[in-house]
Image (cartoon, helix red, strand yellow):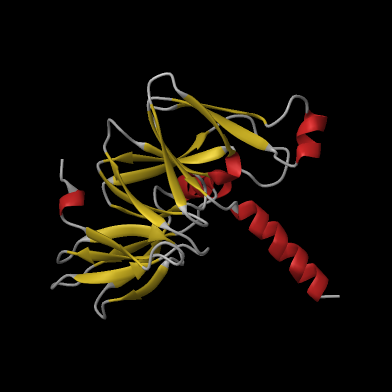
Amino acid sequence: MKDYSEEMELQIRHQPAFSTARATLQPNEQMRLESGAMIAMSHDMVIEGKMEGGFLKALKRSALGGESFFQTIATAGPNGGFIDMAMCLPGDSVILQSTAANPWLLAHQSWIASSMGITLDPKWGGMKSLLGSEGAFLVHANGDGINLVGAYGAIEVVTLAPGEQIVIDSGHMVAVQASVKMTLHKAAAGWMNTIKSGEGLVFHFEGPGEVYTQTRNPNWFNRFADAAHSHGAR
């Protein structure tokens, strides 16, 4: 199998508050990135919007995984080239190495880009959220290559030993290795206590493996922005 990670060079800059990433591609090499993530690119870089995997798979990825219906495929020119990219919210980014034996589960809105050896597919992460927009569907990033993942705020890494457990708010989860066991629960005992606590749903993780978290919750920003817009429109 072709090792894409040895060809595509990925460098993160401007960390940690407003990180961007530059991918340097070999001649005619391709990469996949989230629609709208591109900042700048070489003059002969070719980008195309595609329904990766066909209409039904693209619809599933968009409706369940929180990703765009179309994904951007960037192809370098005959002399190679670069493309700069970032996620929509301010924060840090991280490069995650993936193999078929060690894939990742990504929170929706966290995925920015990946090499072409990676396939993306929504995966059920537990019961559907009834409190806000914190998705129970995650994006399964499988295959050999690298993923560029973004966070709202700073990134913290939790390394769990076999059997070690931790509870993380669902809105603060960025990525988790598939080796980690995970279940989705109410934050407090009973729905009424959960509603009054304002915490919504939480993930229970059990090692071994790594869990990446973000110090800010994108869902709270969305609620703030909606409230500010509604107030300003009066």
